[in-house]
Image 1: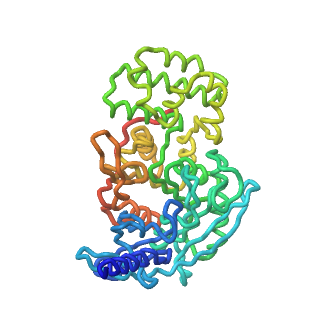
Image 2: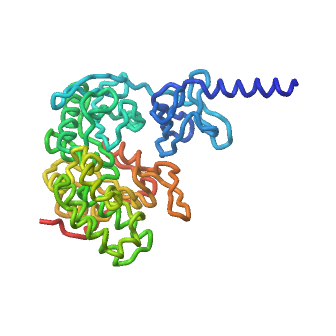
Image 3: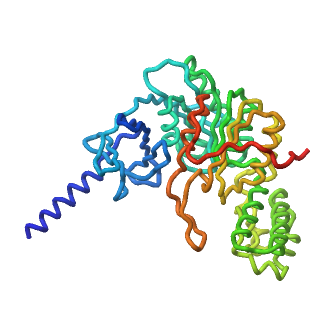
Length: 431
Protein backbone atom coordinates (compact mmCIF):
# COMPACT_ATOMS: atom_id res chain seq x y z
CA UNK A 1 0.00 0.00 0.00
CA UNK A 2 3.01 2.29 -0.28
CA UNK A 3 1.64 3.67 -3.55
CA UNK A 4 -1.52 4.77 -1.72
CA UNK A 5 0.49 6.56 0.95
CA UNK A 6 2.54 8.33 -1.71
CA UNK A 7 -0.61 9.43 -3.56
CA UNK A 8 -2.18 10.59 -0.30
CA UNK A 9 0.93 12.60 0.57
CA UNK A 10 1.04 14.16 -2.90
CA UNK A 11 -2.66 15.02 -2.73
CA UNK A 12 -2.30 16.61 0.71
CA UNK A 13 0.71 18.66 -0.40
CA UNK A 14 -1.22 19.82 -3.47
CA UNK A 15 -4.24 20.72 -1.35
CA UNK A 16 -2.03 22.66 1.06
CA UNK A 17 -0.47 24.52 -1.85
CA UNK A 18 -3.86 25.40 -3.28
CA UNK A 19 -5.02 26.53 0.17
CA UNK A 20 -2.12 28.97 0.63
CA UNK A 21 -3.39 32.50 1.00
CA UNK A 22 -2.08 34.92 -1.62
CA UNK A 23 -1.84 38.56 -0.55
CA UNK A 24 -4.46 40.74 -2.18
CA UNK A 25 -3.07 43.67 -4.11
CA UNK A 26 -1.11 44.53 -7.24
CA UNK A 27 2.04 42.91 -8.66
CA UNK A 28 4.55 43.62 -11.41
CA UNK A 29 6.56 41.36 -13.69
CA UNK A 30 10.18 42.46 -13.66
CA UNK A 31 11.15 40.33 -16.66
CA UNK A 32 11.47 41.12 -20.34
CA UNK A 33 7.69 41.56 -20.81
CA UNK A 34 6.47 44.08 -18.21
CA UNK A 35 2.92 43.45 -17.10
CA UNK A 36 0.60 44.13 -14.19
CA UNK A 37 -1.48 41.68 -12.16
CA UNK A 38 -3.98 42.20 -9.35
CA UNK A 39 -5.50 39.76 -6.88
CA UNK A 40 -8.65 40.61 -4.97
CA UNK A 41 -11.28 38.78 -2.91
CA UNK A 42 -14.72 38.47 -4.52
CA UNK A 43 -17.92 37.00 -3.12
CA UNK A 44 -18.19 34.35 -5.85
CA UNK A 45 -14.82 32.79 -4.93
CA UNK A 46 -14.62 31.13 -1.48
CA UNK A 47 -11.65 31.88 0.78
CA UNK A 48 -8.74 31.46 0.52
CA UNK A 49 -9.27 31.91 -3.21
CA UNK A 50 -8.76 35.24 -4.94
CA UNK A 51 -9.66 36.52 -8.38
CA UNK A 52 -6.68 37.40 -10.52
CA UNK A 53 -6.72 39.87 -13.38
CA UNK A 54 -3.91 40.87 -15.72
CA UNK A 55 -3.65 44.25 -17.39
CA UNK A 56 -4.19 42.52 -20.74
CA UNK A 57 -7.55 41.15 -19.56
CA UNK A 58 -6.74 37.53 -18.75
CA UNK A 59 -8.56 36.54 -15.58
CA UNK A 60 -9.31 33.59 -13.34
CA UNK A 61 -9.23 32.29 -9.78
CA UNK A 62 -6.35 30.99 -7.70
CA UNK A 63 -8.59 27.99 -6.95
CA UNK A 64 -8.83 26.97 -10.61
CA UNK A 65 -7.18 23.60 -11.23
CA UNK A 66 -5.13 25.05 -14.10
CA UNK A 67 -4.63 28.51 -12.60
CA UNK A 68 -1.63 30.32 -14.05
CA UNK A 69 -1.32 32.28 -10.80
CA UNK A 70 -0.38 30.62 -7.52
CA UNK A 71 0.88 31.42 -4.04
CA UNK A 72 4.10 29.93 -2.67
CA UNK A 73 5.44 30.84 0.75
CA UNK A 74 3.41 34.03 0.78
CA UNK A 75 4.63 35.18 -2.64
CA UNK A 76 2.76 35.37 -5.95
CA UNK A 77 4.04 33.30 -8.86
CA UNK A 78 2.89 33.29 -12.48
CA UNK A 79 3.33 30.41 -14.93
CA UNK A 80 5.31 31.37 -18.01
CA UNK A 81 4.88 30.11 -21.59
CA UNK A 82 7.44 27.33 -21.06
CA UNK A 83 5.65 26.03 -17.97
CA UNK A 84 8.06 27.43 -15.40
CA UNK A 85 6.98 29.76 -12.60
CA UNK A 86 8.20 33.33 -12.09
CA UNK A 87 7.80 35.31 -8.89
CA UNK A 88 6.20 38.74 -9.34
CA UNK A 89 7.04 41.74 -7.18
CA UNK A 90 4.36 43.49 -5.12
CA UNK A 91 3.45 47.08 -5.93
CA UNK A 92 3.15 49.06 -2.72
CA UNK A 93 -0.33 50.55 -2.48
CA UNK A 94 -1.75 52.54 0.41
CA UNK A 95 -5.36 52.03 1.51
CA UNK A 96 -7.31 54.57 3.52
CA UNK A 97 -10.81 53.64 4.69
CA UNK A 98 -13.35 56.33 5.45
CA UNK A 99 -17.05 56.78 6.12
CA UNK A 100 -18.81 59.70 4.44
CA UNK A 101 -22.42 60.84 4.27
CA UNK A 102 -24.63 61.31 1.25
CA UNK A 103 -28.32 62.20 1.46
CA UNK A 104 -28.19 61.50 5.20
CA UNK A 105 -26.85 57.99 4.57
CA UNK A 106 -23.44 56.72 5.81
CA UNK A 107 -21.41 55.19 2.98
CA UNK A 108 -18.15 53.25 3.24
CA UNK A 109 -15.29 54.36 1.00
CA UNK A 110 -11.64 53.53 0.39
CA UNK A 111 -8.81 55.43 -1.25
CA UNK A 112 -6.31 53.14 -2.98
CA UNK A 113 -3.15 54.84 -4.21
CA UNK A 114 0.55 54.29 -4.93
CA UNK A 115 2.36 54.38 -1.60
CA UNK A 116 5.19 56.67 -0.57
CA UNK A 117 4.68 59.26 -3.29
CA UNK A 118 3.30 62.76 -2.96
CA UNK A 119 3.57 63.34 -6.70
CA UNK A 120 0.34 64.78 -8.13
CA UNK A 121 -1.50 61.93 -9.88
CA UNK A 122 -5.00 61.66 -11.38
CA UNK A 123 -7.80 60.92 -8.93
CA UNK A 124 -10.78 58.85 -10.09
CA UNK A 125 -14.01 57.83 -8.35
CA UNK A 126 -15.37 54.49 -9.51
CA UNK A 127 -19.14 54.69 -10.07
CA UNK A 128 -21.21 51.52 -9.75
CA UNK A 129 -23.18 49.58 -12.27
CA UNK A 130 -26.34 47.77 -11.21
CA UNK A 131 -24.48 45.19 -9.13
CA UNK A 132 -25.29 44.58 -5.46
CA UNK A 133 -21.80 43.38 -4.53
CA UNK A 134 -19.34 45.34 -2.35
CA UNK A 135 -16.80 47.48 -4.19
CA UNK A 136 -14.05 48.22 -1.68
CA UNK A 137 -11.84 45.41 -3.00
CA UNK A 138 -12.67 45.87 -6.68
CA UNK A 139 -9.90 44.31 -8.81
CA UNK A 140 -10.42 47.11 -11.34
CA UNK A 141 -9.64 49.68 -8.64
CA UNK A 142 -6.37 47.96 -7.80
CA UNK A 143 -5.44 47.71 -11.48
CA UNK A 144 -6.02 51.43 -12.01
CA UNK A 145 -4.01 52.21 -8.88
CA UNK A 146 -1.19 50.03 -10.21
CA UNK A 147 -1.17 52.31 -13.28
CA UNK A 148 -0.31 55.27 -11.03
CA UNK A 149 -3.81 56.58 -10.41
CA UNK A 150 -5.36 57.46 -7.06
CA UNK A 151 -8.63 55.53 -6.93
CA UNK A 152 -11.60 56.08 -4.63
CA UNK A 153 -14.12 53.24 -4.36
CA UNK A 154 -17.20 53.02 -2.19
CA UNK A 155 -19.88 50.48 -1.43
CA UNK A 156 -23.12 51.42 -3.15
CA UNK A 157 -25.91 52.32 -0.71
CA UNK A 158 -27.52 49.15 0.60
CA UNK A 159 -24.47 46.99 -0.19
CA UNK A 160 -21.33 45.94 1.68
CA UNK A 161 -20.49 48.26 4.57
CA UNK A 162 -22.73 51.11 3.40
CA UNK A 163 -26.07 51.85 5.00
CA UNK A 164 -29.31 52.75 3.25
CA UNK A 165 -31.48 50.86 0.81
CA UNK A 166 -30.28 49.56 -2.55
CA UNK A 167 -31.66 51.65 -5.38
CA UNK A 168 -31.25 52.32 -9.08
CA UNK A 169 -32.45 55.90 -8.87
CA UNK A 170 -29.94 57.75 -11.06
CA UNK A 171 -30.55 61.09 -9.34
CA UNK A 172 -29.77 59.71 -5.89
CA UNK A 173 -26.84 57.62 -7.14
CA UNK A 174 -25.39 60.70 -8.85
CA UNK A 175 -25.64 62.54 -5.54
CA UNK A 176 -23.72 59.70 -3.88
CA UNK A 177 -21.04 59.82 -6.59
CA UNK A 178 -20.68 63.59 -6.27
CA UNK A 179 -20.24 63.28 -2.50
CA UNK A 180 -17.75 60.47 -3.04
CA UNK A 181 -15.65 62.75 -5.25
CA UNK A 182 -15.80 65.50 -2.62
CA UNK A 183 -14.59 63.02 0.01
CA UNK A 184 -11.85 61.71 -2.30
CA UNK A 185 -10.59 65.25 -2.87
CA UNK A 186 -10.24 65.70 0.90
CA UNK A 187 -8.36 62.42 1.38
CA UNK A 188 -6.01 63.06 -1.55
CA UNK A 189 -5.57 66.80 -0.96
CA UNK A 190 -2.30 68.05 -2.44
CA UNK A 191 -1.61 64.70 -4.13
CA UNK A 192 -3.77 64.88 -7.28
CA UNK A 193 -3.68 67.06 -10.39
CA UNK A 194 -7.07 66.21 -11.96
CA UNK A 195 -10.14 64.42 -10.64
CA UNK A 196 -13.13 62.71 -12.24
CA UNK A 197 -15.25 59.62 -12.59
CA UNK A 198 -15.21 56.21 -14.19
CA UNK A 199 -18.51 54.32 -14.53
CA UNK A 200 -19.29 50.99 -16.13
CA UNK A 201 -22.66 49.77 -17.43
CA UNK A 202 -25.35 51.59 -15.41
CA UNK A 203 -22.58 53.90 -14.26
CA UNK A 204 -22.75 55.34 -17.77
CA UNK A 205 -26.01 56.99 -16.77
CA UNK A 206 -24.82 58.02 -13.30
CA UNK A 207 -21.25 59.27 -13.79
CA UNK A 208 -22.01 62.02 -16.38
CA UNK A 209 -24.94 63.19 -14.26
CA UNK A 210 -22.69 63.36 -11.19
CA UNK A 211 -20.20 65.44 -13.17
CA UNK A 212 -22.90 68.05 -13.83
CA UNK A 213 -23.44 68.38 -10.08
CA UNK A 214 -19.86 68.50 -8.80
CA UNK A 215 -16.82 69.85 -10.66
CA UNK A 216 -15.00 67.10 -12.55
CA UNK A 217 -12.03 67.21 -14.91
CA UNK A 218 -13.02 64.08 -16.85
CA UNK A 219 -15.57 61.27 -17.14
CA UNK A 220 -14.83 57.78 -18.48
CA UNK A 221 -17.57 55.27 -19.31
CA UNK A 222 -17.32 51.62 -20.27
CA UNK A 223 -20.15 49.66 -21.99
CA UNK A 224 -22.81 52.15 -20.91
CA UNK A 225 -25.83 53.55 -22.75
CA UNK A 226 -27.04 56.99 -23.78
CA UNK A 227 -30.61 55.81 -24.45
CA UNK A 228 -33.17 55.38 -21.64
CA UNK A 229 -33.83 52.11 -19.76
CA UNK A 230 -37.04 51.77 -21.79
CA UNK A 231 -35.07 52.10 -25.02
CA UNK A 232 -32.47 49.64 -23.71
CA UNK A 233 -35.20 47.02 -23.25
CA UNK A 234 -36.61 47.72 -26.72
CA UNK A 235 -33.22 47.58 -28.47
CA UNK A 236 -32.36 44.38 -26.66
CA UNK A 237 -35.57 42.76 -27.88
CA UNK A 238 -34.94 43.90 -31.45
CA UNK A 239 -31.42 42.46 -31.32
CA UNK A 240 -32.82 39.16 -30.03
CA UNK A 241 -35.40 39.12 -32.82
CA UNK A 242 -32.72 39.63 -35.48
CA UNK A 243 -30.61 36.86 -33.93
CA UNK A 244 -33.63 34.53 -34.13
CA UNK A 245 -34.25 35.48 -37.75
CA UNK A 246 -37.71 36.89 -37.05
CA UNK A 247 -39.40 38.95 -39.75
CA UNK A 248 -41.12 42.36 -40.01
CA UNK A 249 -44.36 41.17 -38.41
CA UNK A 250 -42.54 40.14 -35.24
CA UNK A 251 -40.60 43.42 -35.16
CA UNK A 252 -43.87 45.35 -35.39
CA UNK A 253 -45.24 43.31 -32.49
CA UNK A 254 -42.12 44.01 -30.43
CA UNK A 255 -42.54 47.74 -31.05
CA UNK A 256 -46.14 47.55 -29.77
CA UNK A 257 -45.01 45.49 -26.78
CA UNK A 258 -42.35 48.07 -25.93
CA UNK A 259 -44.89 50.91 -26.01
CA UNK A 260 -47.31 48.96 -23.81
CA UNK A 261 -44.73 48.04 -21.16
CA UNK A 262 -43.32 51.57 -21.24
CA UNK A 263 -46.77 52.92 -20.35
CA UNK A 264 -47.07 50.42 -17.52
CA UNK A 265 -43.68 51.35 -16.10
CA UNK A 266 -43.88 55.13 -16.45
CA UNK A 267 -47.40 55.11 -14.95
CA UNK A 268 -46.23 52.79 -12.16
CA UNK A 269 -48.70 50.16 -13.36
CA UNK A 270 -51.69 52.48 -13.39
CA UNK A 271 -52.26 52.15 -17.15
CA UNK A 272 -51.10 50.20 -20.17
CA UNK A 273 -52.94 46.92 -19.56
CA UNK A 274 -55.22 47.25 -22.58
CA UNK A 275 -52.30 47.81 -24.96
CA UNK A 276 -50.46 44.83 -23.51
CA UNK A 277 -53.58 42.66 -23.83
CA UNK A 278 -53.81 43.59 -27.50
CA UNK A 279 -50.27 42.32 -28.07
CA UNK A 280 -51.04 39.08 -26.21
CA UNK A 281 -54.18 38.49 -28.26
CA UNK A 282 -52.51 39.06 -31.63
CA UNK A 283 -52.08 35.59 -33.24
CA UNK A 284 -48.64 36.55 -34.59
CA UNK A 285 -47.29 37.06 -31.05
CA UNK A 286 -47.17 33.31 -30.43
CA UNK A 287 -44.26 33.03 -32.90
CA UNK A 288 -41.89 34.99 -30.64
CA UNK A 289 -43.41 35.18 -27.14
CA UNK A 290 -41.07 33.45 -24.71
CA UNK A 291 -38.09 33.75 -27.06
CA UNK A 292 -37.73 37.55 -27.07
CA UNK A 293 -37.07 38.74 -23.53
CA UNK A 294 -35.38 42.14 -23.35
CA UNK A 295 -34.71 43.47 -19.87
CA UNK A 296 -38.30 43.17 -18.65
CA UNK A 297 -40.88 43.26 -21.47
CA UNK A 298 -40.65 39.57 -22.33
CA UNK A 299 -41.44 38.60 -18.74
CA UNK A 300 -44.26 41.13 -18.52
CA UNK A 301 -45.81 39.72 -21.70
CA UNK A 302 -45.92 36.25 -20.15
CA UNK A 303 -47.29 37.43 -16.80
CA UNK A 304 -51.12 37.20 -16.55
CA UNK A 305 -52.86 40.55 -16.29
CA UNK A 306 -54.39 39.77 -12.90
CA UNK A 307 -50.92 39.05 -11.51
CA UNK A 308 -49.47 42.18 -13.11
CA UNK A 309 -52.17 44.28 -11.49
CA UNK A 310 -51.45 42.64 -8.14
CA UNK A 311 -47.65 42.50 -7.98
CA UNK A 312 -46.44 44.16 -11.18
CA UNK A 313 -44.91 47.17 -9.51
CA UNK A 314 -43.33 45.11 -6.72
CA UNK A 315 -41.75 42.80 -9.28
CA UNK A 316 -40.73 45.16 -12.08
CA UNK A 317 -40.73 48.70 -10.65
CA UNK A 318 -39.32 48.43 -7.14
CA UNK A 319 -35.89 50.10 -7.51
CA UNK A 320 -36.87 53.71 -8.29
CA UNK A 321 -35.44 53.44 -11.80
CA UNK A 322 -36.08 56.51 -13.97
CA UNK A 323 -37.48 54.61 -16.94
CA UNK A 324 -37.57 57.47 -19.43
CA UNK A 325 -34.30 59.05 -18.26
CA UNK A 326 -32.96 61.63 -20.71
CA UNK A 327 -29.27 60.78 -20.88
CA UNK A 328 -28.67 63.06 -23.88
CA UNK A 329 -29.76 66.08 -21.83
CA UNK A 330 -27.21 65.22 -19.13
CA UNK A 331 -24.44 64.80 -21.69
CA UNK A 332 -25.27 68.15 -23.30
CA UNK A 333 -24.67 69.80 -19.90
CA UNK A 334 -21.35 68.00 -19.45
CA UNK A 335 -18.33 70.24 -19.94
CA UNK A 336 -15.60 67.78 -18.92
CA UNK A 337 -13.85 65.58 -21.52
CA UNK A 338 -15.60 62.24 -21.93
CA UNK A 339 -14.25 58.80 -22.85
CA UNK A 340 -16.87 56.27 -23.97
CA UNK A 341 -15.92 52.67 -24.72
CA UNK A 342 -18.38 50.43 -26.59
CA UNK A 343 -18.60 46.63 -26.79
CA UNK A 344 -19.47 45.87 -30.43
CA UNK A 345 -21.67 42.82 -29.79
CA UNK A 346 -23.19 43.89 -26.48
CA UNK A 347 -26.36 41.86 -25.95
CA UNK A 348 -27.33 43.47 -22.66
CA UNK A 349 -26.82 47.03 -23.88
CA UNK A 350 -27.00 47.12 -27.71
CA UNK A 351 -24.82 49.96 -28.94
CA UNK A 352 -26.30 51.19 -32.23
CA UNK A 353 -28.34 54.17 -31.04
CA UNK A 354 -25.84 55.04 -28.29
CA UNK A 355 -22.97 55.05 -30.80
CA UNK A 356 -24.85 57.35 -33.17
CA UNK A 357 -25.84 59.79 -30.44
CA UNK A 358 -22.28 59.98 -29.11
CA UNK A 359 -20.89 60.60 -32.58
CA UNK A 360 -23.43 63.36 -33.09
CA UNK A 361 -22.44 65.00 -29.83
CA UNK A 362 -18.77 64.78 -30.83
CA UNK A 363 -19.56 66.25 -34.21
CA UNK A 364 -21.34 69.15 -32.48
CA UNK A 365 -18.09 70.01 -30.71
CA UNK A 366 -18.24 68.23 -27.35
CA UNK A 367 -14.91 66.71 -26.26
CA UNK A 368 -15.83 63.02 -26.57
CA UNK A 369 -13.38 60.23 -27.32
CA UNK A 370 -15.26 57.14 -28.55
CA UNK A 371 -13.63 53.72 -28.80
CA UNK A 372 -15.12 50.41 -29.92
CA UNK A 373 -13.75 46.93 -29.28
CA UNK A 374 -14.87 44.36 -31.87
CA UNK A 375 -16.32 40.96 -30.95
CA UNK A 376 -16.97 41.91 -27.32
CA UNK A 377 -20.02 41.62 -25.09
CA UNK A 378 -21.16 43.55 -22.01
CA UNK A 379 -18.24 44.11 -19.65
CA UNK A 380 -15.82 44.37 -22.59
CA UNK A 381 -15.47 40.59 -22.54
CA UNK A 382 -14.50 38.27 -25.37
CA UNK A 383 -16.46 35.05 -25.74
CA UNK A 384 -17.02 31.85 -27.63
CA UNK A 385 -20.48 31.28 -29.10
CA UNK A 386 -22.21 27.90 -29.28
CA UNK A 387 -24.50 26.86 -32.17
CA UNK A 388 -27.52 27.67 -29.99
CA UNK A 389 -26.30 31.26 -29.60
CA UNK A 390 -25.20 30.95 -25.97
CA UNK A 391 -21.93 32.62 -25.07
CA UNK A 392 -19.07 31.57 -22.81
CA UNK A 393 -16.90 34.42 -21.53
CA UNK A 394 -13.17 33.88 -22.01
CA UNK A 395 -11.50 37.12 -20.89
CA UNK A 396 -11.67 40.92 -20.84
CA UNK A 397 -10.51 42.12 -24.23
CA UNK A 398 -6.87 43.13 -24.48
CA UNK A 399 -6.32 46.88 -24.54
CA UNK A 400 -9.46 47.99 -22.68
CA UNK A 401 -7.95 48.22 -19.19
CA UNK A 402 -4.79 49.89 -20.50
CA UNK A 403 -6.90 52.39 -22.47
CA UNK A 404 -8.77 53.38 -19.30
CA UNK A 405 -5.57 53.91 -17.34
CA UNK A 406 -3.83 55.88 -20.09
CA UNK A 407 -6.85 58.08 -20.84
CA UNK A 408 -7.37 58.94 -17.17
CA UNK A 409 -3.67 59.82 -16.93
CA UNK A 410 -3.96 61.98 -20.03
CA UNK A 411 -1.63 59.96 -22.27
CA UNK A 412 -2.11 57.81 -25.35
CA UNK A 413 -0.21 54.74 -26.53
CA UNK A 414 -2.32 53.33 -29.34
CA UNK A 415 -3.13 50.77 -30.53
CA UNK A 416 -5.14 49.34 -27.65
CA UNK A 417 -5.55 45.72 -28.63
CA UNK A 418 -8.11 45.50 -31.43
CA UNK A 419 -9.91 48.63 -30.30
CA UNK A 420 -10.74 51.30 -32.86
CA UNK A 421 -11.47 54.99 -32.44
CA UNK A 422 -14.77 56.09 -34.01
CA UNK A 423 -15.15 59.34 -35.90
CA UNK A 424 -17.98 59.98 -38.34
CA UNK A 425 -21.50 60.78 -37.02
CA UNK A 426 -24.47 58.92 -38.49
CA UNK A 427 -27.55 60.68 -37.14
CA UNK A 428 -28.64 64.02 -35.80
CA UNK A 429 -29.47 64.46 -32.14
CA UNK A 430 -33.18 64.84 -31.29
CA UNK A 431 -34.24 68.38 -30.49
